[in-house]
Length: 235
Image (cartoon, rainbow, N blue to C red; front, side, top):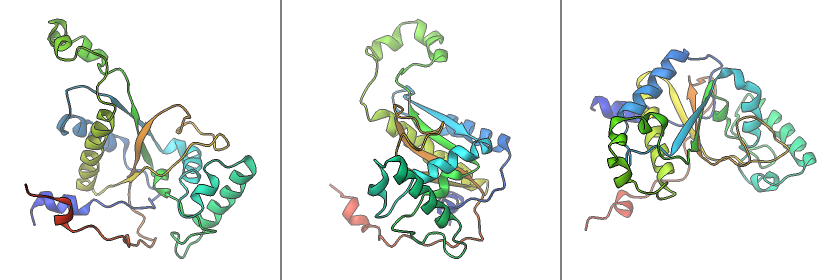
């Protein structure tokens, strides 16, 4: 197996991270490398990444409560204050299940990877030119305006760009023996207030980064992948 395939095979989504915090400089270097190495689209940056470190522990717990899945998810998305108090108690019962944390409690399961030491929130940046781009010699020649003569492009561009950065970051993390877990299952509720998930802020997904907690049980998805021929069509 090639080195590249080894790195790709090491990348796994996990649910539980150790409390041990990786060095901040290591995460910073990975993010800078991803920024420089990733493929891109149209040389415009429609996304922004907010990085929440270990000091946001309480906010991440609230976010984990808002990540409820299973049959219980739809009971609580538009829940009242009383509903959210109940959901918080269900989460505490679920998180304290030391035998198999991934078992559902009252039909609920949670995406606890959002409580990773470092959490990346991929959001929509609607100004397609950054300050440094506007100050570049190329922009001052007027050529940039000729190519991009209107503000913004396809509304899907920022999600494409975020995904490119996210998977590049995940592979770079695997190289450094770090795990990077994606999460898109979360919702806003006014009774789960925190500084991470804002009502009017668009987000593509979140990426939790840290060390895997090997004391917990992990189970592979029971949903089989489709056959490759069902996805790839040679014309």
